[in-house]
Image 1 (cartoon, rainbow, N blue to C red):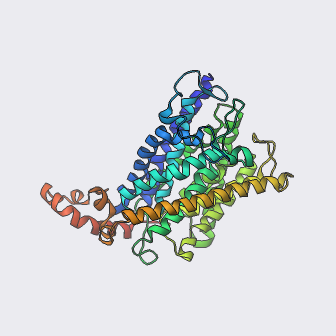
Image 2: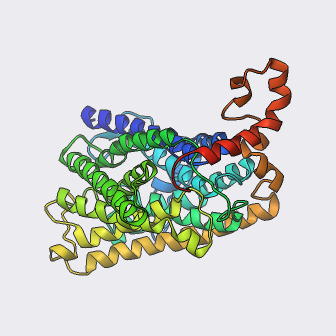
Image 3: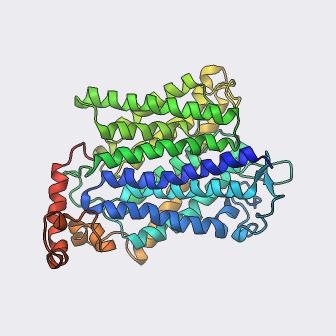
Length: 450
């Protein structure tokens, strides 16, 4: 057992777990004041549910022996993580199996939580929880098998993208970001638009919270990317540096677009640019040079900044730009490997710009398209079934008054107490006054529409 690798992977897993509360804050600050608690709860609810499902059967579906054609791991092989607690059971490189189980668990949690930003303000919490469990089971766990499960010399057979196709996805551009981005688009289309979308201002209610969430995401992402080396080694070091510089370049790219297009650079743009760069470098951080990472990050910052406006042109309501950032950023990073990869990096593959030809580029495109099609079809089936059985969205009245009150019987901010009212007045007046004050908070908040 390699204790150094074990310590690094467990630390990285903890960093990745922190990304889900970071995402909750990032998303929570972007919604209106009357929806902030629901946004936080969608991330925390996904974490609770997916964490349990991962132990029950998710890990086995993702990393059990392949059942044929590289599509699905054996769900019964590690049911309840049976047989994985012995000290002698290790992954390649002397890593205990349970360390790898924990590291991959937090990937699954984050991926599901990412989708929630597309349906902010309007989806029933019960329907979201059912969707999260079904989507993790039918979409994420199988796709994780395709992308992350490598065959080995002991006879284990893994997924088709990792082993048969040989596409490069170091830490989840396909399985995490393209997968979640496509699902977000499909779910947003089926749930429908927010009341007043395109007509009423829907500004972020707390931009400092958005910035804090982005900072926590950036911090945790070093565990996401560098931790995927599964050891404290040179590969992890290269991934760490590439993650840093790609994110920096993406922030600059996004802010430049805002400056030339809108006349000013915004804090929301800076936070969103950071996430766009992190998304793009995720599949590529082990295959690019630091200079190539800067180029990739800058391209991602520019393209994602332009892509977030597509929802107004095409009329789909992706509330918090999951499609524009995660789907577009994931595509930029995944396909960008086919152009910018260099054999000097740990992955050891040359892209088109380094004399590698079109073969690697073709593999990257196939991987991206396969995940997009599968995720879109299965997500649509899941969402349509839930819509028919129990409905997906809250009533118009509940949406207008605030989803926090209707779904959780709480408010994110106790405005009545701040006004100095007594206990009885607080209880009797909270529901009546909070919606009005939420609207006032929305109208006086700073920043561009989300």
